[in-house]
Image (cartoon, rainbow, N blue to C red; front, side):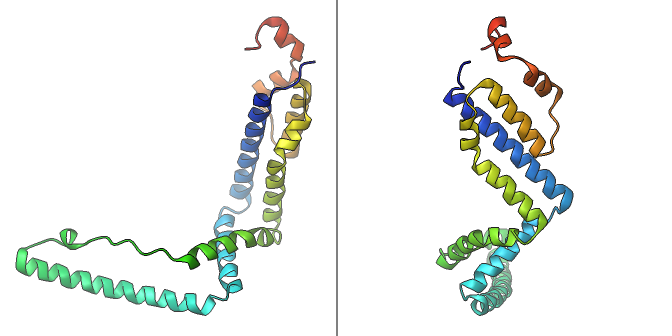
Length: 189
């Protein structure tokens, strides 16, 4: 029996990975569509707390709110003055100025990412997603262990069973084919 090439293994890894991602999407949609949003919020809050930035972040939010009010007032005044002198519209008088880079934002994001798994372990849906992601992370080993077409077909059947997914009619037919039938019929391109 011929062994599976690297390209074929890579193909199956991508295909199975996509199938796992689809299953995760189904779980989230079915069980808790807002799960990832809440997870991100909890991870961000936990990261801010663990970095000791809670009080400073609250103060920064207040300052941002005050800035917004002042910016709106400033814009209104500039528009009024421009209209009075030059008859210019508000769209013409606004200039976008990008904010400067802030290292604390990156630190919060990195810490939140590291805290996500711990938060996910505390909920049933999180544990399901973590288990599926572990399967996905292990795909190179899993697919690499399957060295023949027959083994890949068996693996694909197992993936469907584990993910509780039904194979399409075409998949069922392809999985029933004997690898030698493909070679004998000349359909191996």
